[in-house]
Image (cartoon, rainbow, N blue to C red; front, side):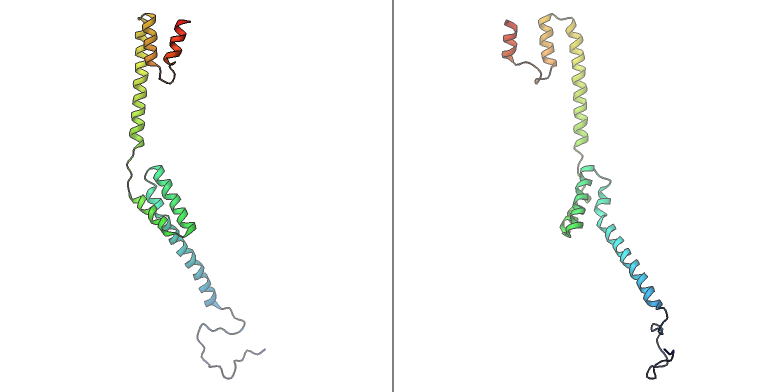
Length: 156
C-alpha cells in the first residue's frame, strides 16, 4: 500500500479526518466524554430521585419509611405520581402522637405502681376481709375472678 493520497482528494483535510493506520483521537475523546456524561446525568437523576427521602430523613421513622417506599415504587415502575406523593409527604410535618401517648402510658404505670405499694402497706393493718377487697381493687380486672366464682369459692 502506498501512503499517497488519491489524486481526487483535496490537499488540505480537516483535523478530524485521519490518515489510514493512525489513531482517531476525536473518537477516543468523544467516547470518554460520553461515558462521563452518562454517569453524570445518571448521578444527577438519582440524587434528584432521592430528594424526598433525604428531606424526610429528619422526620419520624414511619414517615421516612413511607417516603422511601414511595420513592422505590416510583423508581422501578416509572409512575411519577408516587414520587410526587413522596415529595409532598416529606414536605408535610406530621404531628408526633406517639411521644405524648407513651409519656401518658408511662405516667399511668407509675401511678398504678404507687397505688399498689400504698394499698399493700395500708392493707397490712386492715382485717382479712378488708385486705381481700383492697387486693381486688389493686388487681387488674382481667386477673380478678368473676363474681360467681368468688361466691362459690367462699361457700365451699
